[in-house]
Amino acid sequence: MMTSLEHLEKLIAFPTVSRDGNLDLIDYVRRFLSGFGVSSLLVHNEDGRKANLWATIGPAHQPGIVLSGHTDVVPVEGQAWTTDPFRLERRGGNLYGRGTADMKGFIACCLRAAEIAAARKLNTTLHLAFSYDEEIGCVGVRRLLDILKDAPVKPRLCIVGEPTLMQTVTAHKGKLGFRVTAHGLEAHSSLAPIGVNAIYMAADLIGAIRAIQKNIAETGLRDGDYEVAYTTLHVGKMQGGEVMNIVPNRCSFDFEIRYLPEDDGEAIAARIRAAAEDIARGYRGVFAAARFEFAELQSYPAMNTPVDSEAVKFVHALTGGNSTGKITFGTEGGLFQKALGTPAVVCGPGNIAVAHKPDEHVSEAQMAQCDRMLERLVDRLAA
Image 1 (cartoon, rainbow, N blue to C red):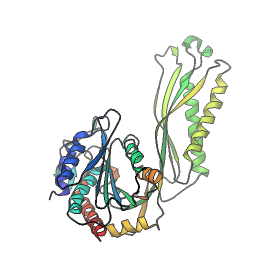
Image 2: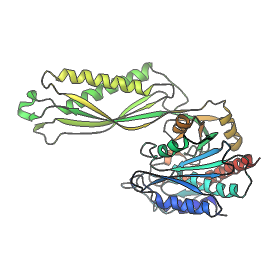
Image 3: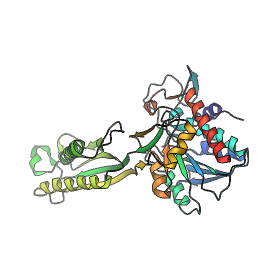
Image 4: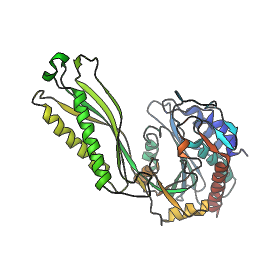
């Protein structure tokens, strides 16, 4: 039997950056599972360069437990790694490599658990769901969920193995991301007042977004269980203009809304759209076609599983813990809840604080703790 560390060494060697394909990794997983009689369903993306994998061990007619993980990782360019990011290095009780924490460490533990489960007679089903393009907005898993919606039996629980230091996480914020393009009127900069400066328009709207954020921070919903207790708005990228002596006719910026589960992200987006229309109206005396254009870039729902639910009690029985937490980053858990009505909990090895950074790592102790959790899961499924 392969250990989870041996699997992790194989998985890290696949450079599954989101912009590239993941088929080599998926084929490794498929072939490994087929070695002990487990078949896999592959759900590809539009161009066939990426795929989700869905595998089932045990009685297919029973509501089962899903172990969900994403196979893609973020890029390493421009980061000062002291190791080869795509070659696992073991040092000081830690395992270094891109994706060790986020989240190939969990997938490695899942593969070990799958081999254990395949040798047992399960009375409750175990599912593996490994997706692509999570890092760019939980994109890939949606194609898989579209298929699972029509299945006669829906999963009973989804455990998403994002890095939580093996703490049971019951909730996270949702996200909406947009690109806004301001359309103004170009002019020679010596005659600036006869044009409409799209950068100014964008700056005005960014000021309105900041004012809405201030209002939310001061008077909006709060939940002290999150590191940031309220819904946040953030502008992360801006681009506009050609040269200094032309009044720019276009400027775009990207912004996001990370909203509490109890908050209404769409309503906040509507406030921003209304502010944009008010700003554009003020420029139409000079240029009648002044406007803002919104394009949605990303969206995923919040996850919110009651702490006293059977799902949380079940995961606590696996981890041996009794505490719960909430996280500000997003996962595929909210999509499982929304698409299938399946309660979700996030629990996995590693620390999100080292994810996306140079010298990303997971401790051997965290991997061993995850192995023990999944061994207990297999015992429960066989009971």
